[in-house]
Amino acid sequence: MSRRCCAPDRSAAPGRTTLPLLDRGAGEQHGGHPGAFAPLLSLPGGAFRMGTQDGDAFPDDGEGPVRTVEVAPFRISATAVSHAEFRAFAEATGYRTEAERFGYSFVFRGSVTAEARERAESVPGADWWLAVPGAWHREPEGPGSRSDDRLDHPVTHVSWHDARAYCAWSGTRLPTEAEWEYAARGGLVQARHPWGDEPPSPDRAVIFRGTFPDGPTAPVGTAPVRSLAPNGFGLHHAVGNVWEWTADLFEPGSPSRALRGGSHLCHASYCNRYRCSARTSNTPDASTGHTGFRVAAGDGSRNSSRLPTGSVE
Image 1: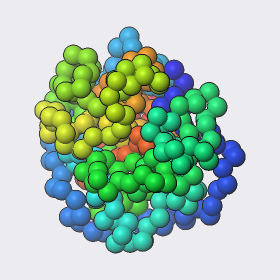
Image 2: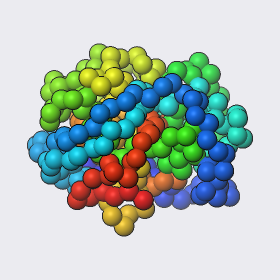
Image 3: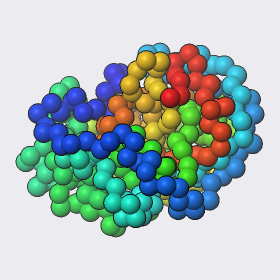
Image 4: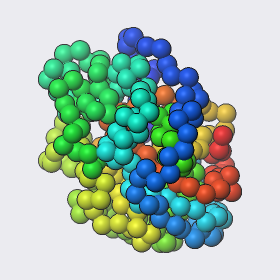
């Protein structure tokens, strides 16, 4: 599958009128705000087997090879950042996301409000994605929708720059890919998923159920950040629910950032990226209805061993 199958970028909607963008350093000016979210999990680090030789892996995504990576002790959030947590940041600082500044964000077509659909623009080659004017984290499916009744769900429609701004305010950072995969594996060695090798099921992960993209057999969307049991390290929804931004570049010299974990739109016939090793990418200004992030802390410069395809800025 192509990379765009998982996360469209701004170039997928050339007809959209762009608004003035935030200064790329704007998020740094708000200052630290430690304790703005739930306490982080402390993980001991150490050597682990990163990557995969799984036959379902996508070679172009750089899931392999399997190699031993040493990770220093670090801390990571048990959950993705929730709507409530991100809203507290935005209200405290007056921060405006890039979805707000561009004037649109990408939404799965089966979730778009009737009002928004009339003005939406489909993504060529992936028409299940619509560039929806007015979609942002407080109106995730476009004008007329609300996130008020899902404050405990992961925040979506946040770009990599937005995630970094939240981290700057909260005194945290984004995890490196090595940290993310180490944490997602929960102490299991080379298991496909955070719970083991058994295939995803509704009691293990929030993923697409039915025939993608037109035949879901359950409501399509996110779930509360603690709605399913955690892995061996205490992380909830390490795969499924939302893709999660990481600190790393997807590949050296690329402007795109690596995303991990799959989402509620992953399906065996389409994305099939809910392995611990699975990766995709997007440009740092992109935002979608299935992308969020979790935070970390510690000396991330020591935990950036994403070879041969990744590097840290």
